Image (cartoon, rainbow, N blue to C red; front, side):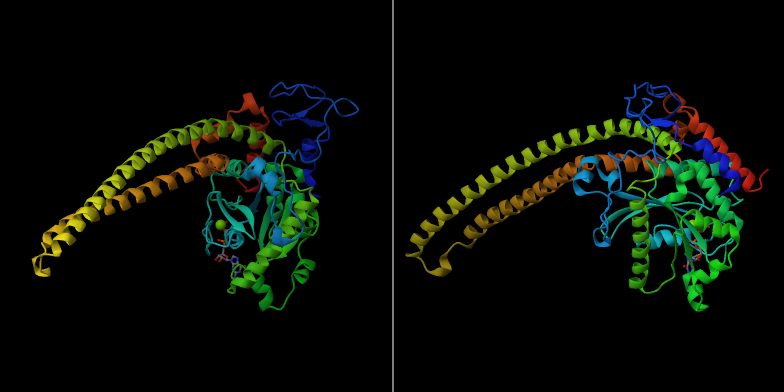
Length: 457
Ligand SMILES: Nc1nc2c(ncn2[C@@H]2O[C@H](COP(=O)(O)OP(=O)(O)OP(=O)(O)O)[C@@H](O)[C@H]2O)c(=O)[nH]1
Ligand SMILES: [Mg+2]
């Protein structure tokens, strides 16, 4: 298919690779110890090695397992999600395509809310990778919006960094890559984007690719169908469509009817679900994604220690505060009982006295003083109970936080990558010790390709 990218596929050919069970690194060749962690691989194949399929997916640990109806369109079975945390139940979608094609608008439609800036412009609106998430039709969805990679306004450093971020945020791998094309606006750039993606993600990424044609409204106005357009489309576009087995969809992001927009998104999610099922319920990964994931897990491990300390300290503090408040409440309730008893005694003697007095002669201040004390105590009790409720709510939040620590930590690492945190990004360049030289070499290759394609050379 993609002529000059053929040798890339051979280079990525994973038939002779085996994946380390311990660190997931895709080793090449016939050694049975892992290049990265030295783990001794157990023998399973006829020649003694565990073989890699074209997707080196850790299916047991983190895979898409959706049932076939959209009503229950969830990525993982509940038990599996509970066992492996939210990473296994999240659908990760990457949006790619040229500047102005409608990536950000499509991202917003998928998420059902405005997360990405989308506007008419000759120059690139989205300059950096940005992620957004939402729960759609019962499904956790992560959408990654990207800048048009061939936009010439980007410096070499920007391009490299954004590719790195895209790979890092979508780690351990995307379930779907959407190539967004504005209807009638196809150029050779789309085909080059696919080539670039194959470089970044590995050649079999086309199995995870769907072409999304935006501006369906233009088609409807001209009473044309997408099939009419495709029949006369340039061969390069037909190549792209054929490479992803005819998976394409049209969408009108400017649709005013909320219901109709939702229907379109349901259609898109159903197409994604069918594709993911066809891919054996796996997200996409390749050697480059696996190596990225190794670096990310290292950072997750470090942060986890910090995050695990926090609830322990805060829980201790909250329990102390709860204890103090309960003691105070106890004291106030005793005071209230005392005051009420004394009030009752006084009332009895007052009633006895009243037999001998006229109503006018009852001392007014007597009642008021007692009442005031009682009201003050009641107010204090209410205040202590309110504070107790707050402390208990904080305790509950902290317990939820502990349960959700994986999500918190992972999102934190994603924040670091998305914001371009230098220390985190540096790890990807300096990870030779743990992830081999492969990652750095791959990124250099991608970088060179982008430079050539975008006419920098
Ligand atoms: N009529 C119509 N306009 C659309 C549609 N999709 C996107 N647009 C408009 O196209 C323009 C560009 O859309 P964006 O979402 O910003 O495009 P982008 O691909 O994110 O662009 P960059 O961030 O610059 O790479 C905006 O004005 C959108 O409102 C569509 O389906 N129909
Ligand atoms: Mg954009």
